[in-house]
Length: 178
Figure 1 (tube, rainbow, N blue to C red):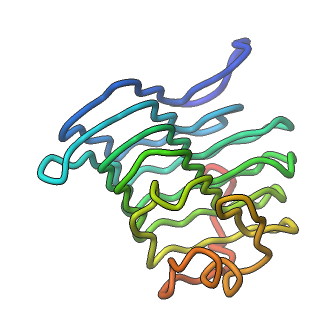
Figure 2 (figure 1 turned 60 degrees about the horizontal axis):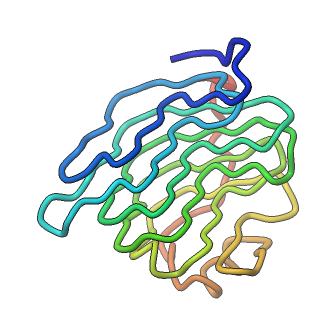
Figure 3 (figure 1 turned 135 degrees about the vertical axis):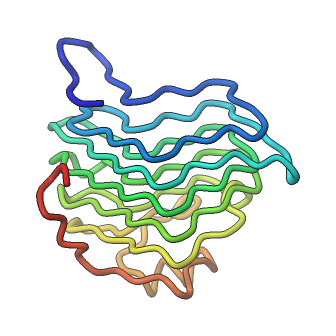
């Protein structure tokens, strides 16, 4: 999936009310101007978790962009994805989570080389676990945890209590979209 065309707002993928054991896997979304994947109220249960795995997402442009955006989602597993944000907007986010509960973020590369946030969480309960990720940003702030911006991985770990086994290194993508 590539390019935004002339649309006002562009979603590489838009998922609303996708419930239970849904799976989004092995996709490549490039040159998305606004959202790589947008999840809106996707609910599962502890026994039938949703799975987003092995995707490559690239967002660009000059506006606020989001690699993965989650809103009011529950019991989602987000594993082994590569997210590359190159938007020049300092408010762009490689991963954004707002509300919801019991979501897991493991083994992902969340890179914002445009100067915005690698990770942005507005509520602590939404992100049950986050670990073994590469959280990278060329901007002032690596992340945001429930009301406070954090500048580096040590501060992120201290604020969030997550990502103890994560790193913050430039993943050196071959290109913006690869």
